[in-house]
Image (cartoon, rainbow over all chains, first blue to last red; front, top):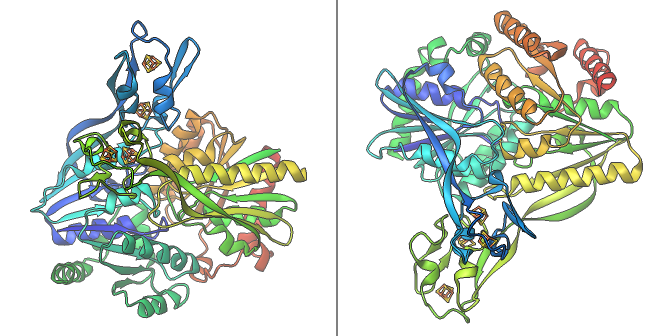
Amino acid sequence: MIISIASGKGGTGKTTIATSLALSIEHGQFLDCDVEEPNAHLFLKPEKEKVETVSVTVPEVDMNLCTHCGECGKICQFKAIVSVKKSLLLFPQLCHSCGGCIKACPSGAIKEVEREIGIIESGRVKDIEFHHGILNIGEAKSPPLIKALKKKINNSNTVIIDSPPGTSCPVITSVRGSDYVILVTEPTPFGLNDLILAVEMVKTLLIPSGIIINRSDIGDREVFLYCERENIPILMEIPNNREVAEGYSKGKTLVETLPELKEKFRELFKNIKRS
Amino acid sequence: MKELVIISGKGGTGKTLISASFISLMKDAIGADCDVDTPNLHLLLKPSVISEEKYYGPKVALLNKSKCTLCGKCMEEDLCRFHAIGKGEFPVFNSFYCRGCGVCIVICPEKAIDLVEREAGKIYTGKTEKNFIVYGQLEPAQLGSGKMVVQIKNKARNMALEKGLELVIIDSSAGLGCTVIASLSNCNCALIVTEPTLSAISDLLRIIELTEYFNIPSFICINKCGINQVNEKKIIDFAREKEIKIIEKIPFYKDFAINNTGEIPVISCPESELSQKIINTWKKMLSLI
Ligand code: SF4
Ligand code: SF4
Ligand code: SF4
Ligand code: SF4
């Protein structure tokens, strides 16, 4: 069973929920798919066991074979290979690794080489297998790294995915294939606005979802009314708490500050499994 | 004309509130909301929309069945690296997976496949009492957020040039991938809004590497001060090491967090301590751009 934790808006408490859920279930796999800004390790503090590099393929041109016909530049939709008169310009960061230029080259001058885009670090926290990706600085595209990270998934496990914020490519790549998505929000006008967008996203992906309302006693009642209207289950409400906020600032998880919540998270997990 | 981008790496540090405050303190500035997945700036600034245009995302492959002879070439294993072409009676093109790379089009002997535009959202121009803002909404689960950011920025820039305005204030999204890179590119300077939590610090270190990578002068504003002194000190030490100026430390205002109902404090209660802090930040920022 794969459960993703997502939210349209950043900073609502995705990582807080994901890490606490994992520590309450106490087994399975944890994947931090927020490869632009991975933070779950600050809370789970896994023992690092392995580091791998992740690469994508990009073209390399043998100028001795190139006849400057310009076909490669014509097929490339991303302006990653441009042929101007007697020279060829390559912009590897724009390349989508589609392989088009290689197929188009009549002289066999292009071959694919690997270009590193980031790393995957793996480790263990008690019985939980931990993996996260770290995207290299200046790298624009996170989906290839997220895909590589998701290859770690073993389907017989319970898998918790901490997904990046937003509603487009990185999030879709993270949550696609999940059995359930937990959306984390807070009861403010922004929280509601972004929740509605996140709900639309999971609906498009046809994944069942439920909501956790963080800092549930701040703001107003609109988020609650929305969930009721749309018939979206509210899985849990977590009140605002100074102790939790201070713990968070130090890298302390929610269930470490409030151990009584562990039972609630286990209950929540059972309910999701049953549904 | 100058461009100032407000970034944070981590979400929820108060970026949008700072951006909205800065914009409302200006007259004749243009704001650009470059968080196209979940734009929030307009919720604070409440502009009236003066124009709206369709946004077309990356192109996608579309099959013209009447031309297809079922030769099977496009369905060959590994032809489409994005697994967007499925096998059926006819080839099935999945527009969610298609990246519009054009490989299938070149391979098709019957020219039965085209790349077509796909509407993926809207870009709005709004007017507030004193300023303009440009913002967009990408449809949920669509691709092409980076491209939309580029269009929003171009629009804001052109408006500023046309109207002879001095400044574009850009509110970036969280993270440091494609949309943030698009928000940052060509800006004159960046204000990084952070908070004294371990997560925010971890993200701060990475976002500073990014601004260095693109050679953009940056400044730091620490929001929510008081929740963790040790972490505050870490940020200050790190900024010193990197020679980045911390322009303001804004205390954590519990009342404000709790009553967060979409007001901009510098407008709704300009006399408050929080507002004074933000106004100060703005004055310092203006003198530095
Ligand atoms: S692999 Fe595709 S995206 Fe990359 S350069 Fe070649 S044609 Fe362009
Ligand atoms: S298609 Fe091949 S031969 Fe033609 S310009 Fe490109 S690399 Fe050179
Ligand atoms: S355009 Fe590229 S990604 Fe889209 S279906 Fe064709 S080969 Fe696949
Ligand atoms: S390559 Fe063209 S003609 Fe052949 S199956 Fe595909 S679409 Fe049809």
